[in-house]
Image 1 (cartoon, one colour):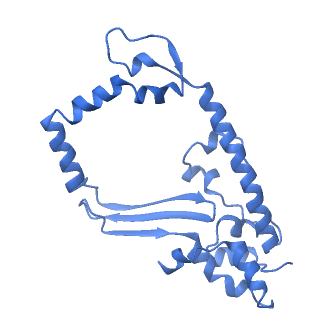
Image 2 (cartoon, helix red, strand yellow; image 1 turned 90 degrees about the horizontal axis):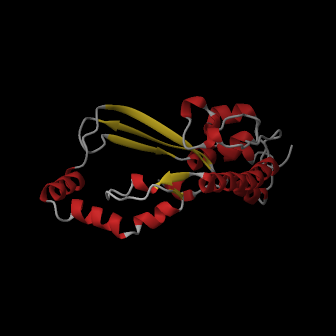
Image 3 (cartoon, one colour; image 1 turned 180 degrees about the vertical axis):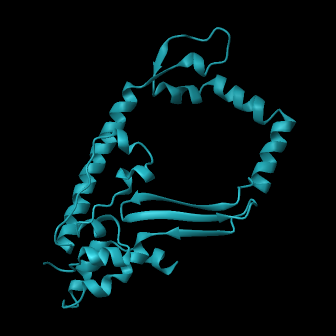
Length: 216
């Protein structure tokens, strides 16, 4: 066992996620959960890495492998984007629109074209009804139905979630942001048991705490 070692019981007790929780062998990655599927991860070939000893070295290796995995994910997405195509006639509303398919990146050229600028100008700056609707939307907001909702993503440091309670108005009744730093800070007394004061630097770096999150 290395510096700052913990076990799976500590992960469950303190709510550890991300590389800190994976270093103990607990396989929890929101990107692979069917009930919390988001983004495009299910259509990509990617891996999630686990540790055995739950020490600082395991957490270091997991973070290092996650960086290589991020490069793999970005490469796959860019490859898929270059193979996608769309018909420019779908966006061009003129009667004599071109019927030839264009590359995906041509869509950005369309956004800068005169046709897109004309459409935006006509609907937003010359129509009084559209301007009033635009003003009311940003001044009053949107009425959200009553209820509770929680959504989390797999951030590099761990589970990052937001819980919100609505009372039916445009302003949230309560909003709570769950960051992994606060939960990881609570397990530090367990990690530094039996170690020297100098080992605190290694332990702190391995869990990658953001003190701004802890203060908040």
